[in-house]
Length: 172
Image 1 (cartoon, rainbow, N blue to C red):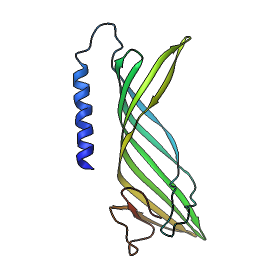
Image 2: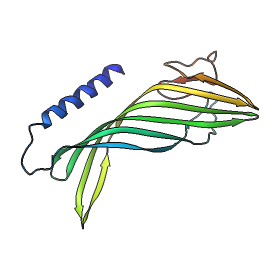
Image 3: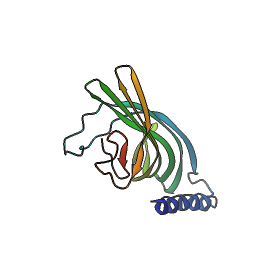
Image 4: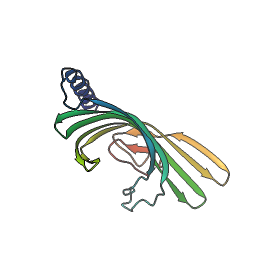
């Protein structure tokens, strides 16, 4: 995973340096600062195969992207975003809140064509995300317990039920 992340970042930086050679009245490379709120939920199945029953939590994202012209009206738009995700789960008298922070690198291809006095904007593409931190807060009656989430490749039945997450998915 680290090798893939390094390769993508190196490609991103190389692409930016090549862009300095462009000139003329063609569209220019532009930069944008991103930010906003997320309404996130963790879904899937638990270790018994039952569907997870979680509520959404509010998170946020901040980052930047670069809009690189490819041909008229088509752009490559890579970025780097810090994103928070999570969920809330109620079971009996206990409420558990999960918050996970990610670094994400979106690699979007965008069409931006003239439409009247404005533009039509269509985009798609993959992204690579890497979980960098996670916290779980369990509240039972008025007692609050906070823990770090441990990211592992394998989750065993002996692992803590409330804070062990697989790198390629989650377990609750």
